[in-house]
Length: 205
Ligand SMILES: Cc1cc2nc3c(=O)[nH]c(=O)nc-3n(C[C@H](O)[C@H](O)[C@H](O)COP(=O)(O)O)c2cc1C
Image 1: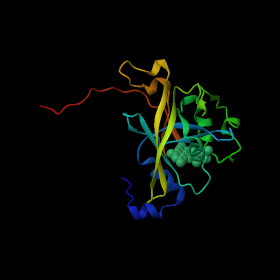
Image 2: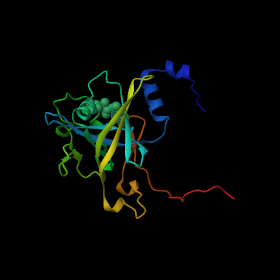
Image 3: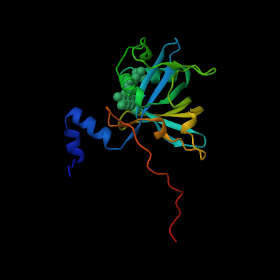
Image 4: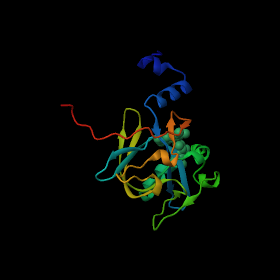
């Protein structure tokens, strides 16, 4: 088995280290965050760090990389306090990945990919059309992590849209039915298949 201690990891080449440490935590969520600037320029970007923070109230968080370079998603969220989370599915993987390219603020990633904007009700931020799971989000707070200069962005679900075939009677969203992607590392995508759903566990007697 390969082994890397802290010092060896620190000394690794940049790309190898990025790939290694971005994949060692396991498969990650694959989302497109939609946002809009006060000038009305829509933005979409891929994020692999969206995670569940709690159900009551319905809260999701994501990790924002250091703001040493312009971060349009963050800037837009801070401007108007809203954004959308949309699940990446099999048919849009290439376009979704391309949204990580650093386009200037005045160029919308919607204009350079086949991803289509969708607007629902009065919500100003764009959803990704046809994404099987879409959420409108309200920014709640940001928590700075000084040891590595990142931010945990905390947000609450305002509206959750789920395609009918994915939604089970017990409330579970069966992501496999929507061919929803997961991210392995920084550039590798997989489509997980449903295996089994287990019952609530109690201690053995
Ligand atoms: C697979 C993948 C996952 C990513 N996940 C994150 C993430 O969780 N947090 C983050 O700040 N950037 C992440 N990025 C980088 C952003 O997608 C990238 O910085 C993008 O340019 C941000 O766009 P924006 O400036 O329009 O917000 C990821 C990139 C890729 C390719």
